[in-house]
Length: 313
Image (cartoon, rainbow, N blue to C red; front, side, top):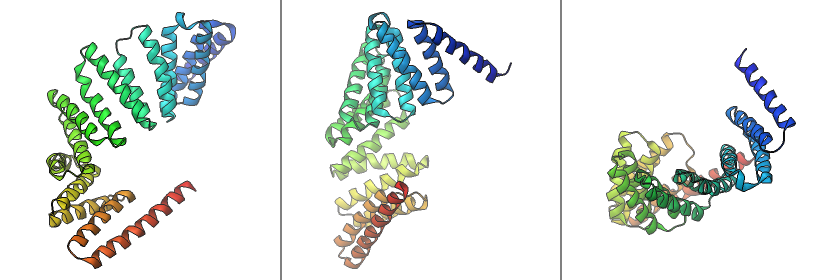
């Protein structure tokens, strides 16, 4: 018997079990059907099975079926994640977490971390931060301090999106210390990148250069081009603030050329670079070049708007 025939037979058996039974036995059949659909990449179908099972378990009585409610909501959350419906994934994970607390699952910090990630993807940054803060409490409770770096890093990301740059810096410094203690070098440098990003927003050029140059050296070795051109932009802006227009212009040109050479439509990035270059030209009393740069910015914005329109069509 082929694998496909085996799956067909099992599916038929589960459908019969669902049709011929009531209560938890029927719900378990739907859970199994949902898992099979998930494994086959049929996420909408899997979600429907899980939702049906959830309704049955809730009708049977939440207090008796906390483990099943946990499992089925985990399934619902994972399906929503695959369907890129992050807010609903976070909400389902929240129900799973409440059930997990009742049945005393120790890995609560991992669940909170996933929920925080879903909230972040949904743009709900305050909720994301709260999840990771609670995960830290759970991590301390069960002595799994190796996860501190991840949680503080994610808190830093949420705070950055909220424009709370100094708080974001504080979180990244804690994350960096945790990663350094566990010799996770790549993660340490990821923190350096994020610190440079925050200090760029605060217009603190010395700190941008301190963290940004170290990150640039590392990512240059790895050929991580997107981070390379972003760091060159941060460093260029920092040198401009310090009055070193020659170094600033060179770094910004390198950032622009690298982004263009990769063939990606980095419109927003190219606009930022050219606007900064225009400021440098003005500082050097090169008004014609500044005017040409601003003309190019206007052209890029027009192209970017057309590109968005074409994608929408």
